[in-house]
Length: 406
Image (cartoon, rainbow, N blue to C red):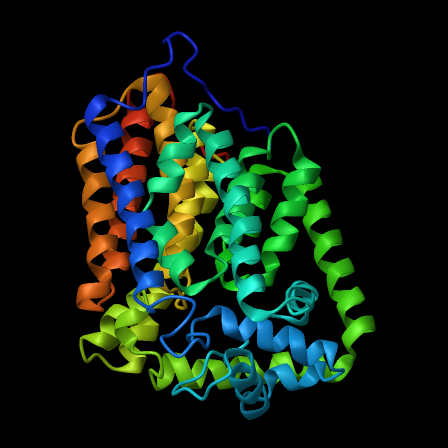
């Protein structure tokens, strides 16, 4: 099935950063930098008052890598052993546990980082992945203002403060989508690497199949299979057994029993559970969202809507579909926002579009003060903007949605 993307080339590109948007972006960037510096000097980030490391999410990466370097790769999925190594990393005991839930493929990255002292590895991780994120968003938007918009996005703070992988996830998602048309093999490479976090890629195969992007599918499959095979050879089958067995353990701990607080889950599942709803109800609601998202993405990617709208839809739907999503993962929300901004450069912003983006960012900023799934509401707001774009641009005559029936 041939699919064509209509692009509005008649209109000149419009400036994305009006003075108010620019000022707000600079303000958010200053706020992020100030918060990180204040947290550091008040011993709330990186190093405690006693000189030892503070327990943050990155400790699970370093600890897993150190176990690999010590020849204990299968032990990364043994929670007591992994927790003991986390305490070695920080030089102190701490309450709670930061689990390693990633496939063995990602242990190569963890082992490389664990070659360095913990704090050095933490900062290097952010220093390497942040530019990847910035470059992806800037490439999508297509002008230098993309750097400012990317750096000012509230998800940056959440990811930096805990040393998580949101920058990498957003960078890979953004690179895969922006390179899909002109560099399909490289796009496939990005999507293949993104399988280190499989819950974010539930809908990507559906979109690629619906759009007929077979070269990208082949490249992603080759990368995934090769990466998995190499990790199997390097770490052994017991490590993969540990990963597979750990899936149900993780689900029971964090989705059934709420070890990390249901209010921190930025999903429909987390919203229902944080409000006292049953696990059955939460899974039912999440299941409905997954099915609806899959159907919508398949339809949009078989349509003649502008590619920017399709890409934005896939980015935001990927966040809606997964039941397991935390605040640092919301860095990925910058990807659909970037595609919306790029489209606005061609058509202008729709009424209340910027205001809705501002409301979504405000919801993200208040999360630390309410510890509720306000991030999920922010994702829903952006999904509404994408849906509105699809309806408006599909009904004004310049773009028509056409789903071919086979």
